[in-house]
Amino acid sequence: MIPDTPDFHREQEKKREQKVRKATRREWIKKGIIGGTAALGFGGYMSFEAQWLEVQKKTVFLHRLRKSSNFKILHLSDLHFSQVVSLSYLEKALEEGFSQGPDFAMITGDFVTSQPTEEKLDLYRKLLESFARKRPVFACLGNHDGGAWAAKNGGYSSNERIGKLLRAAGVIVLENQKKEIHVRGQRLDIVGLGDLWSNRCLPNQCLKKLEYGKENQRNPIVLLNHNPDAKEVLARYDWDLMLCGHTHGGQLIIPFENYAPLAPVKDRSMTHGLHSWKGRVIHVSRGVGNLYGLRINCRPEVTLIQVSGKA
Image 1 (cartoon, rainbow, N blue to C red):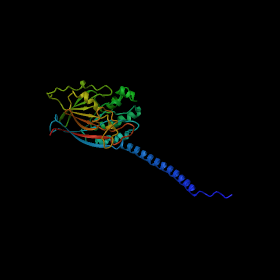
Image 2 (cartoon, rainbow, N blue to C red):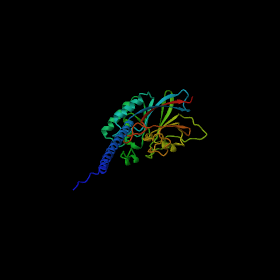
Image 3 (cartoon, one colour):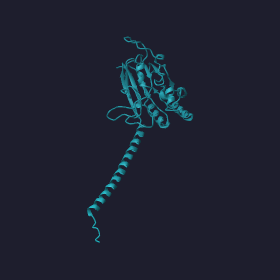
Image 4 (tube, rainbow, N blue to C red):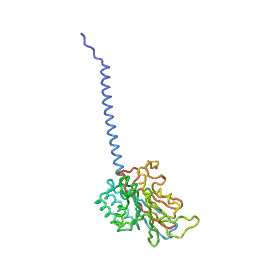
């Protein structure tokens, strides 16, 4: 018998199919490597940004201050000491802030995320104490610092533990309380409010209600308030400047849109920065720490606020 004559075209088609299969496998492997590398790189960047601290400098004019008045407030918020926010990082942030030469510092809540060990809390106390010795430090407490909300989310059932730690460190903790201070010859009332989510924001205990059409003679009032949404509760009360945190600036801001879909506030127009509101001024810090060890397009910050009388 005459052997079958090889089908040249069929053999070539088989070879092409084999090459395509090999090329497809190589392409999928290549895409997988590129995609995995990109994901790892993006994850690495998010972790890097979470500790890429920014020093902000801002100016606020308050008409109740004397024209010659001029002082500096260091505003810090949301330190969130935890497994993903180390004491060494917080020390760096505090050093950056205090190196700006503030007259006093204000920390607006969320000192912890959950429940650190007693040993770690003692180290935290020592760190805060080392800075509270340099300048007066005032604080209010946040939703993570203890209470019904915190207890449901891995935190303390009461804010007494964190309050005790702060007082032991020399921090002046104000919860629905007022304290008069003198700074560079200017009398000033510092008011600290309880946390909104913890149902402890009680302005009637420390503020007077506005009397429309009448301007009372009083000291300028600076509020420490963790959650900027509390402004609606505070609208009827008399104050000048409110310092807040809570939002982490959104922690994730969509590029080009300036939109923070994850910001834990009802009013997402006020997730960070300075805002004029009903004749008052509100500053919302992006915060020092974070949750989950990640930030996207939203660097952590320490802020030096220069407060002056109206020119």
